[in-house]
Length: 386
Image (cartoon, rainbow, N blue to C red; front, side, top):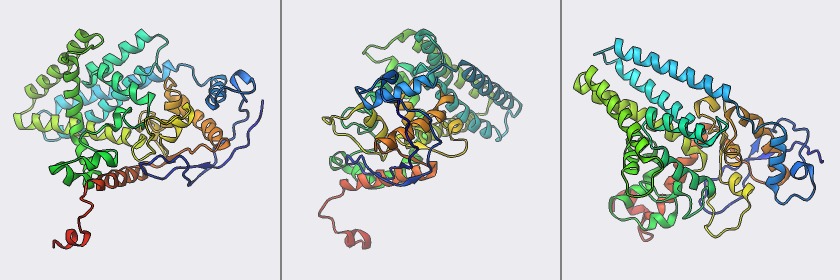
């Protein structure tokens, strides 16, 4: 076994869309980790850099389940949600109901975080129990399709930020590569150079989009695991929720309530997931990169007080990608190990504060969108209208 000295970690602050795997900026040294084994279970000559890291994390007991944390977390969120519904009933007819709507948007996002963790097998020991929990959280409580999420998110984890393979960087409302921007026409071409500024306001519609994706998935002709169950859960959730809101509140206030709740939910979800990979290096589809570097160099951590609770553990995106089934309470300790390990192998490890990451994301989208401009446009003419 070999003990590794704690090194100052290099932090990537680039938002280049070209493959770039060595970027620098200072980050405070991680807490000391006493032992890093030189191979799986202490054997020499590991078959990969990740094997030694995995053995160290496993031997530290950081891949165990932490059921008590998730049970308590679910109960706390559910008690607050019950209080929100009591407030909804007591404030009947008052415009203070919109504050309740905003609170529900936040609480539903917390349920979505737990659904994400159940889908990653972080909560229970059996696949069946994790699947059931995830379906209840996603379909019945939040109104998202668990099957849609699993299909999309599994492909993302396998090929994060990989061109033509990661569904999270496929062309949609936004473009993620310059070649996508050059193909744009009409209003999309005009919007592209400004898409960074549009991104966060557009998240107010993401809640609606997630609900639409859910029904589009369960009623699609392709294979959907446990389709009937998902349809029932989604119908009960959405019809029941809408019926309660419109039966209690005046028509205009009911529309405002649902609009505020979905807007807050969409912005909160987007603000939690967007910093993870957007603006980080993208990998060509045919590139040959080992698992450790593929996951670490394309991911960005967020540090700051309360980040783990506010972002449902997504702030430790690097550790989450390396160990997708790791329970949330173990991510912080694992981060210290991973930082030191990456420093010892000169692997770029990125960690920034939340608002710094949002600035990176905005600049990244705007810069990518500039490729949509006509290369023969005169900047002075555009500026002065000539």
